[in-house]
Length: 211
Image 1 (cartoon, rainbow, N blue to C red):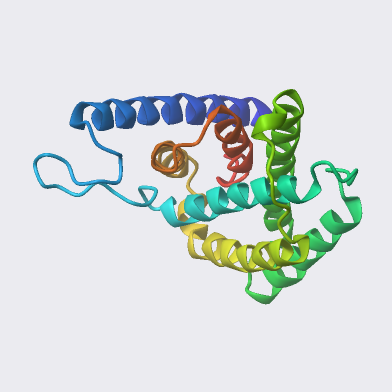
Image 2: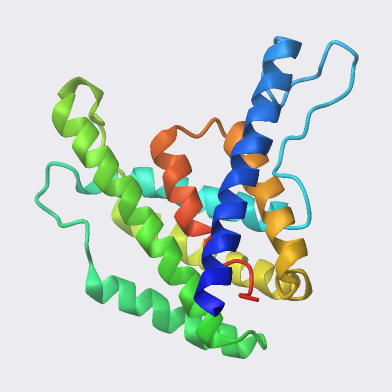
């Protein structure tokens, strides 16, 4: 029964994300301006994801963007996308930091497992794209050490937002609606392509506490 409710909620989130995204795109197109630009009436469009889970969603999207750099640093080097040792290091860091700030280590670890999986979705998608279209492959190779420093900071920031949104995330219905608004608006504001939208859907899977 619990798994059925979780699946149903997941479908609801997907439907709401699509709806919010479609409405936002239509409004942006009608205004004839980028979604974060001023409209013809002078009202400013948002420059961040909407709702109570907007800040958390923004950080999730930032982490997905960093996955582009991870892919660029590995592509053509023979380095595998899967890095179990690094993944375990990240999850252990998450467990320790979550406990330190009074966040449930189990749920925090599940959330970050989703971030790792989403990152690999992006990396695999980019590898396939660059292999099929070599002219689109990156011409520079970002430093993986610097990338990991950025990821470590994002880990700390994400844990902080998880802690700040505990009450909202504990309310399944409210969380589902807020998450749909945040993810839908974030996908539009960041102009995410199909690959990154698919990764975002996976990355937010464990944000709301199951009913």
